[in-house]
Length: 274
Image (cartoon, rainbow, N blue to C red; front, side, top):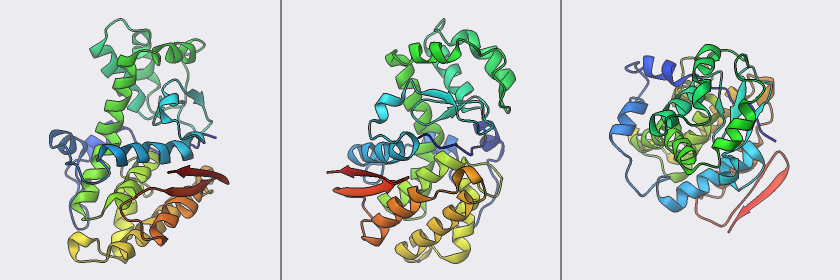
């Protein structure tokens, strides 16, 4: 089961750089890219692998996130094709950015010919210029290690690094950084009420993060409350089990470092990391 993504184009995110936020300023994608986050949190290689599995359990009902490079379908959420390890969407700009990066690194690849069409459909759910062969060609490209690396790099640049950097700026640990990452994957970081930055703002009204002298558990509960509120604003996200029976379970157990063994459920399916 692959759940819909509610995201804003990275172009919108970059246009919002400099927007003020409550408390610690939101670290931008550009800043997070220019200043790589240090090891010790979710960016520790072992913890990052756990994060990829946790997201994959919710997005693809599987812990095998590396099997998702070739995933592609239109899940009917108004964002065109959703594909790859993080659900890049043809209607939100991040799929276009990915194919542009891949083409910069490997000109003449099997997806390069779709760049004009991807630019045209950006912001819509249209398949114009993509059908009927785009899914087949995506799956073919996914066998190329260069395309797999491009997916990894765009995931990190647009989603993972900014989430972890903001988590560290707020003084929260590995679990909290994952909560940020999972939120930005689903909701993006635009200016709409359910975007990551506004979920965070909503939480800050209720509790202070450790960087402001607050209690970490209280703040994370506030953040997860705000996340659940955001998810319930759209019918496609009304099942909040990825929070309720996963992240909230780790928090109730006091596992702020996201240390294995981990047991959780998403959409009724049970998962385990030993």
